[in-house]
Amino acid sequence: MTPLQFEALYEAEWTELEALLDRVLGRTGRRSGAREEVPGDRVAALYRRACEQLALARARSYPAYLVDRLERLTADGHQVIYRQHEFGAARVKAMLLADFPRAVRAQARYVAAAAALFLLPTIAVGLVVYRQPELILSVVSADTASSFDRMYSPSAEAIGRVREATTDWVMFAFYVRNNIGVAFQCFAGGLFAGLGSVFFLVYNGAFGGAIAGYLTERGMAPTFYSFVATHSAFELTAIVLSGAAGLRIGHALLAPGRLTRGQALVGATRDSAVVLYGVAMMLLIAAAIEAFWSSAQWLAPSLKYSVAAVCWIAVFTYFIRQGRRAA
Image (cartoon, rainbow, N blue to C red; front, side, top):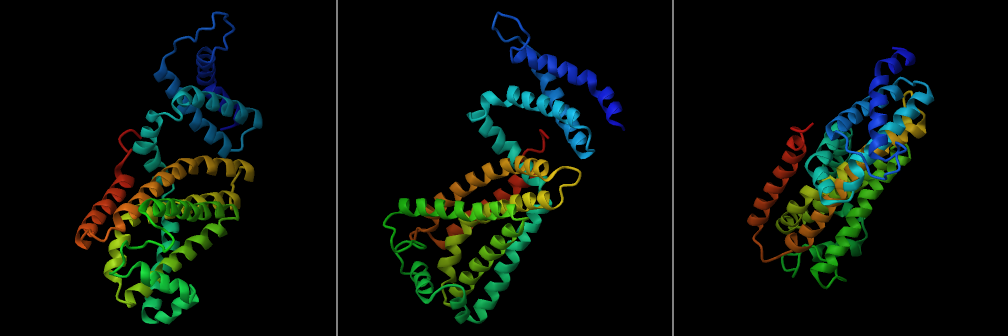
């Protein structure tokens, strides 16, 4: 289809949408100042179609005037439909119940790649260090290894608490800062053609595997795994999703298709934004669990494992099923 045929085919829809948006946004030239009532369902339907047509126009490298017109239409439509609720409870609810899991499913191949880059080094390095525990000194210093011994000792007052921390609230702040730092590295590394995301996923996977292998060989498996089991459902998933978003950015830069690299980067960033909002919430949940639940010595390991199983099932079910009905 030529650009002229494309424009002729959808001209009536675009004109109608422009007229409706002008009425909503008060651009009709009337002096009353009152916004006119318009059929919301019709605006939403035309907005969704304009988004699809914009994607087609970009993919087919149609003339700039045509893409610019569709970008203005979709930008105005987005403003009308979402702006008033952008930061409200309704918007957060829509993001959690539909947008976030849909966005993750839309990036399934990047999620799979990120999961492989993170989990394979975790398992491989964990097994190697378990068989040769002295190799932990190739990953961390002797003092750091000793600190892990103290943190996950069965006699520790609070499992996983660093020496400087005096309360669970201090550890909560520590975990929030640490988790967001790791997630940011995995995402922002995508700007280096995706190589940064690959590096940080592999590095963090290998680091975690080394610590797990070392503590397992030292006989601290019960305290260590009962500590990480619950919050890891949110923390590890969030890190993998951050890396997936970074890989999406890197792919857009390496293979922009018919778009310019700038256009591809903007599109990839827009696609990843919802994922990152969801990741931030998951990391907050993970930090809260880690600080106030995982560290509690008075909770039986069997109870922690039971809750962990529920959390892992809930996370997988959420991403597989949530938001499909309204798609």
